Length: 146
Image (cartoon, rainbow, N blue to C red; front, top):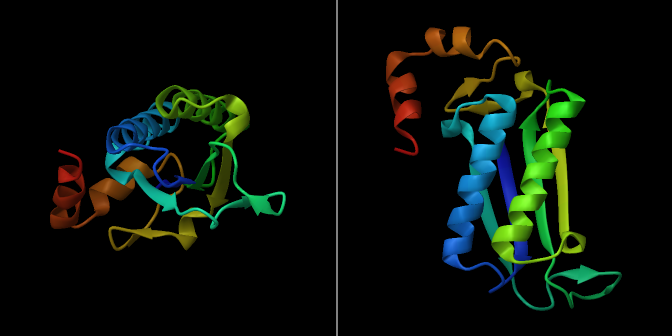
């Protein structure tokens, strides 16, 4: 259900750092929202020089930008906790200061999202939704990440 796109200057994040960030973002989303980890997607975009500008000038600092597309229906407190965990993990793993981290959460209505070929449920209706899925789809989902 959540898709996080992490953008940074090419070379800022090592393959190991990307793995750690993907695991930490997935874990934070799971811990805060209760969503199964097999829904979380984390994608990285390495931005070449002169393809990232701030204030109209080429990027001169180690900025890390995270844009999370998440299912609507979470509380303000849940979203604040999720943001806090992600910014702390980005700082620790990417070895950047907080002033270099930008995070945006965009909420999407569940009825306007399809994952694994199925329209997503409202928060709190996940277990009924999972039971109603074709067993082959459910088995495929449960294998992701293992």
